[in-house]
View 1 (spheres, rainbow, N blue to C red):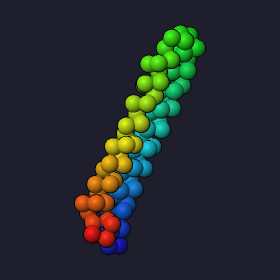
View 2: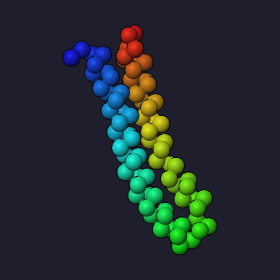
View 3: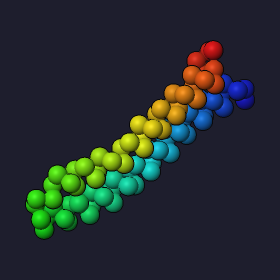
Length: 77
């Protein structure tokens, strides 16, 4: 396997592992949030914010993958 293949695997792992972590976090936050909203409907705004926060992990994983591809020569560079 050449360097380009390893660069692509690294970029894929950066996005994939970040997405798995985000999914696990959002699942737990979402289930707890549903219970909190059932008891106190005024908690809807903060719960939506708490569900959105883990999504930044995927955005950062994508940024890392883009840097790995661009700086590592993954696009034929």
